[in-house]
Length: 148
Image (cartoon, rainbow, N blue to C red; front, top):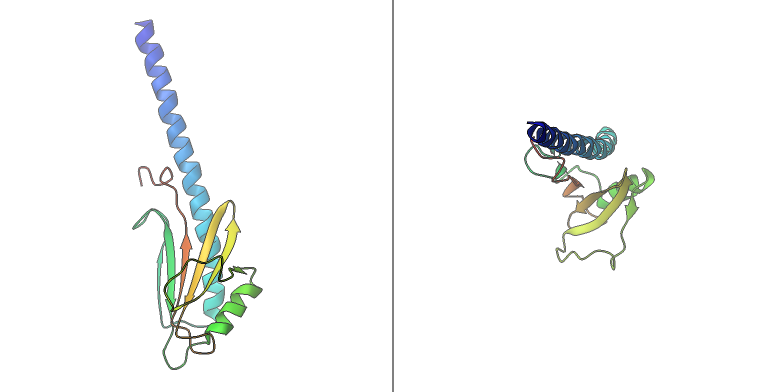
């Protein structure tokens, strides 16, 4: 009887440990996503988008994503969007850092948020032309998505 109680106690402790790790990991994922969402909200006030989407980590897939599309005739220039994000503390990757084969990707910007690497991709026909879309990516963890 003592062995069964001890085994159940150890098993309960292990389950509690996995649950605590999952909750903590998910909280970190959401904090990083909130940083990305705040960047987009600030950008929306200065550069109003035509369309948008938002999905925090574990909602539709493991990672979180935000996208903004702009009107083809009145949107901001791609260089203005990149400059604006750089002023907000985002770092633009150089061409050698990026492995994009998609010619519509004009810039990839990164930022660290609590150990999570956030990424924003700016796409369009050219730097001196109107931007097509801006997509943000916030990584999520498999452990954090357990039970969600």
